[in-house]
Length: 531
Ligand code: SIN
Image (cartoon, rainbow, N blue to C red):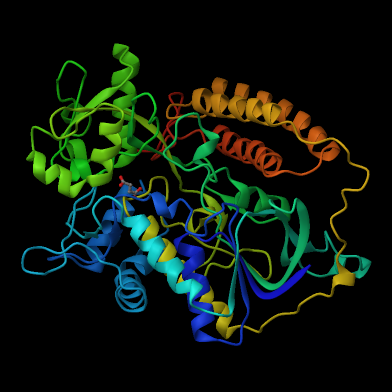
């Protein structure tokens, strides 16, 4: 058993920022930062290519807020958009210029260089080649490692939040509001489950793209945090809004590899396999730089109606080969590895699940409806992204809400630490069955196929009902298996994945209006940007 002042589950940009701020501002406070992966740097944030919003020339907080609200298709919370637009650039300067200096690209005069992405009215995105997330995570985790009051635990999968009254031995806990006191954590190497008791807990587990057959997300993005929050009684909102990135590489051996929107920002144009541009038909004003939901659906429509298995993204005709290699070194190298030279030929692309715009509802300080429990980053829903996230807002949201959650904890009452006697240890006695990796992989693939075909880019009531029936059946099977089997990381993830898949499918069936990235071909009325 471990105890700590603050348990942070997930060490992407939001979790690492919160840890850094808490530890720097109060060296007496002990923080445990956990990650299910073997490296603390591993997270969705690490794979972000495009960049992070700052403030460009001729730019203002008002203009950014306007772009966020427009991309969010009328469902973004204005207060959250205003907060990010006003506070974001200062947070970025405080953390990524001053505390953890990141080598953002500069122009020939030494001024910060800003890139362009879809639905932004200004060039305002700072970047490090096409590996911005990796550069930021390397810097942040190195800074976190230098702080002695942060204990980093890797290969550590959170199983469930410890909440009262649910886990309390004292029957009188029933009369108090629901409160969180840490988590049960599975040590993947030692194969044991430990209680990690905490005064405050921050969920920062990232997203859920791995619930879909095609995704840009790394293996850990399977909705763990969202499922834990849901089981604990946190309010989950906007679960139908799963954003698909329009351009993931469609080449054997590199499926799902992200081709950054910055490629279109630098002039890349989408073409049919016959070489015809098509985005002017779908959005005459923004064309290839239309909001993500519009571009992803346009590609889907072209593929469905014409039977294409991919479309093309042509940068080579619009940018010199040398400039392409310098601006997009990782994309160039990965495409070349699978036989596509992006400096000479167009890239085959398809849409793929990319970002979850919903999550555990939080306020402007990252507080959930459960006492002592915060959520930051992709697992949370601040309302910022509404029905469709504006590109490159996610890293900044992680910085802003990670920082604000830490500050809220620093000024709040420290909270109570329960004793070990108050909370039962995890009990696996009597369980002899080891989990079967083939069974887990098979069920996971079933979930991914159901989500891709029935809860994907284009939805209708019939497909959603079918998905719900199949997922419920699978959930019953998985739950029986879970109760009879020794825990493993795969089993924890599978149980979470089916729970979260159901949350998404049910929210999508309930919402009969098309809006942003939730598109129903049988929409009743309302919504906007219908193709
Ligand atoms: C990209 O580089 O296209 C991804 C950026 C983002 O998801 O915000």
